[in-house]
Length: 162
Length: 157
Image (cartoon, rainbow over all chains, first blue to last red; front, side):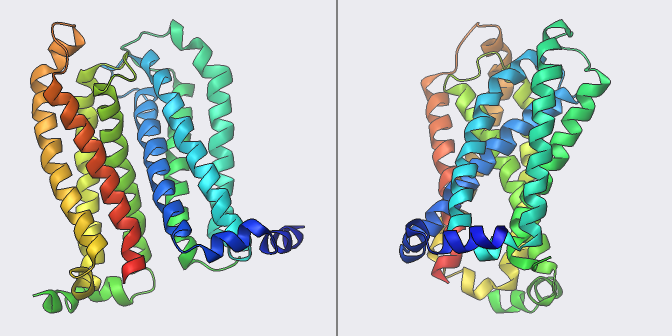
């Protein structure tokens, strides 16, 4: 199935355009790095508070940063898809890329769990107090997953096909 | 001097071992996200976003940002030393280093003002001044410039 997708993408107009436009790939990299800074910066602050640290920050205020994390995520989803379309054969079989996608999935499910189970009850917490055990677990999973995503992204050029 | 650096033990490990370079790159990207991420959120806060986040909390988060900067200075030095003579003539690298130097000095001033005024800003006794707003805009510009430079280094080698 993945071979079909790779072949389909490699013959696409977008693939040809990305490869034949010299400035496009470096521009994508710049936006991908800006996106990752926005995403990780906001997630760090959200998760550190959710893990029970920096209690002089109102835990409700972590909600305010979710849109910024979302903006970072979508910049990187868009630029990431363009990377993939530009060089599908390399990414599809790359073990670093595959684990990175798995970690994004884990981070996504963890975020869904946060949205459904934790976010609605934050109002009942002490705004400047400790956080419940499950919230801490969610925070650590998120931090580990996103840091893993960054590490594996950087290792893609150095690891082979799995 | 740069030639001597290229032949040091560190630079040879980074340049020639299988994992030296990618390990340093990985540390470098984590540090980048911490530094740029936290300073960006703070600058946006000064410029009027996320109003329910207390300024005082950033006194703590800035410590993490400085830790990120140390990660990046050390991993960056290791990466630099492996190809020192090439990097010193690379224009995007010079842009990046200038932006980071200025950005760090500015961050130091921003932090000193934050430590003095955070309480007043949080209790609405006063608001960030025009100077603080310009510091925030300049800081955003410098960190984005650093990313621009950094990403373009490989294309000018």
